[in-house]
Image 1: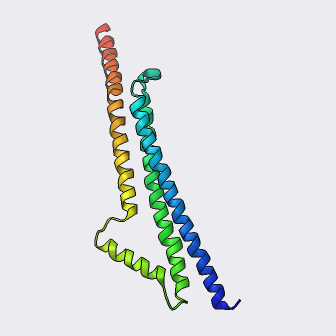
Image 2 (image 1 turned 180 degrees about the vertical axis):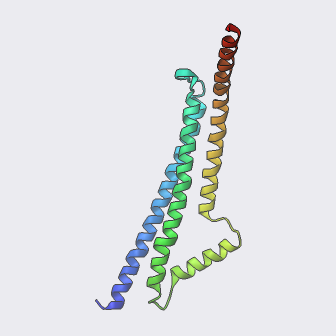
Image 3 (image 1 turned 30 degrees about the vertical axis):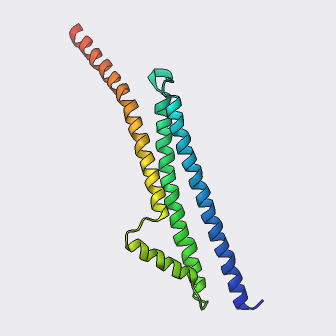
Length: 166
């Protein structure tokens, strides 16, 4: 095998790895989307379940939802970084040895789209993750507020009893 064939086979292997990585990214996003939907259904169907000290299942599932959404956002961001840096830069460097540079041209096209403020698929994924995080956060606030008010009322009553007792 001569040098050009070796470079091309390495390039081909790396391009296949990039595609496998992107497929894994889609599977990961499918997992997070499913987890968010399952947590929303759990919120709906366990709304009346209350645990110790008035902590509801809704609060627990909402906290899990915020966590899953944050992890989803970070995962989308890390996959994008890895795809851009690890795979795109390596493939572009290998392409410098070829007469045709498809990944370099593709990346230039994506960059051109980015400058026009067009939403990319990863932007939509991040938007969904942020929206679900805000939804779950709002549910958390609505569940925590009565608990906090109850604690505050107990504190006020304790202080008033203590003050009146002196």
